[in-house]
Figure 1 (cartoon, rainbow over the protein chains, first blue to last red):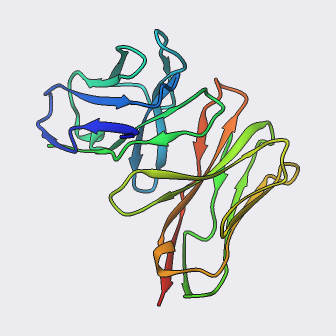
Figure 2 (figure 1 turned 90 degrees about the horizontal axis):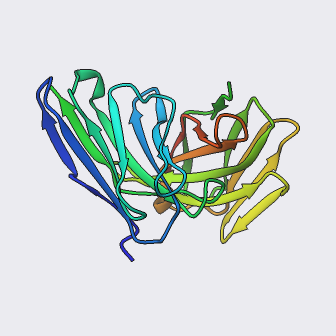
Amino acid sequence: NAGVTQTPKFQVLKTGQSMTLQCAQDMNHNSMYWYRQDPGMGLRLIYYSASEGTTDKGEVPNGYNVSRLNKREFSLRLESAAPSQTSVYFCASSQDRQETQYFGPGTRLLVL
Amino acid sequence: KQEVTQIPAALSVPEGENLVLNCSFTDSAIYNLQWFRQDPGKGLTSLLLIQSSQREQTSGRLNASLDKSSGRSTLYIAASQPGDSATYLCAVLIKAAGNKLTFGGGTRVLVKP
């Protein structure tokens, strides 16, 4: 099993550019999540999807949008990137919200 | 607001010594507590999940305890090996605010051969 996969692995953007981070899981999980990890701030939840067809804001949703395309895929979009969005982004999934979360390898994003 | 703290931030031990990692949280209304491992430049790997009704959970050389009343969890790693070098994060799933995981800052562990 591939588990949770994320693309791209690395990305450099200029301020104002847009991009979409892709995430897919092959474990038939219901819930999916997007986190960002920053030095000194730890991991913070951006958005989550408790089940197919639903999305909810996490702790730091401003500047992001998400789409739960189907049960497997959950994408994160930056419409107009800002330097403050330079971070490592992790996607995760779990069978349900109260179960163990499984993480992808991360996307390292640099916004200049 | 739930706060999760891990002290110390970094720890260095000789190979073979037992590791003791601490996690404290401020709100005892949790569903569960999870311990993760993160290697440099990698994602998180789940190690153990303790439900709020449990006192401890074991997997191989790992043992995690949970004391909800005092807001503490401890991860024990027996007979540490250089391969145990990594950052260890704890996270609590809180009942309020939509069952979201709140993470501690992590403890960076170095096991010296």
